[in-house]
Image (cartoon, rainbow, N blue to C red; front, side):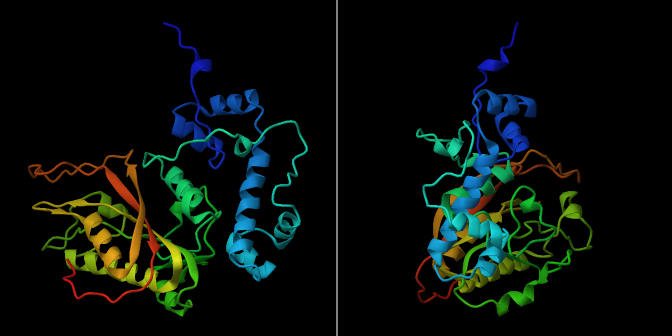
Length: 315
């Protein structure tokens, strides 16, 4: 049986790299390159459009912002920013006969709620909601795995900084209230230590964990409150979380996060679901009581107007 590769329909996304497009479509990188050549797509121009939109969006948001501050926020040089600000909003600086996928009048790649590619989800959140080239701030930066294919945020924090340019989380409190447009939070989701203090799972040996359910819930609540205090009205909290299947009960962390965010004054704009490609198996020999969790959530919360909090139980 012959397989005709030219009949494969690629859903090319100019916001993603060639490697990411290949992974998303389930084809080889050479197939993506052939698609780009065949359709006369100019990837350099696509990248220019991304930069231009980010710069113009920031200038529209704050017309008095200095070039130095724009450079710090976006990660572009001041000369690059000057160049794009000097162009008319609809002016093209492309000098070839190739086309940009951004210029296609028909709808481009549809943004889906479910993906096996974390980069795709983050790109789509930026494209659909944040409308910038990256996020303003990350409270849980770690070693920056979120930003392998994204521009790094200008403000990076972690409770245990592992890189020189990542600041201790305590320094977040020095940020002016109501000043950020977007914040990222990705807390551990494992409650891992039993009464003997021994590890229960392989995944907890690779990632940080909480020592108790109470600690897990309190950390999520604290991050939601901290993000609310630093975001401006209309700003976005992007929070990744995952439900946990314990030995005796399930911890529905996603429900807790949604409830606490709503209580604090956030509006849930969207939910993206990341399906895991790596399956960690529980090998303790205990009988399975619940379905194994192979997905996590990216919540997109928008800060609404402040209101008086009700006194509620933490978990």
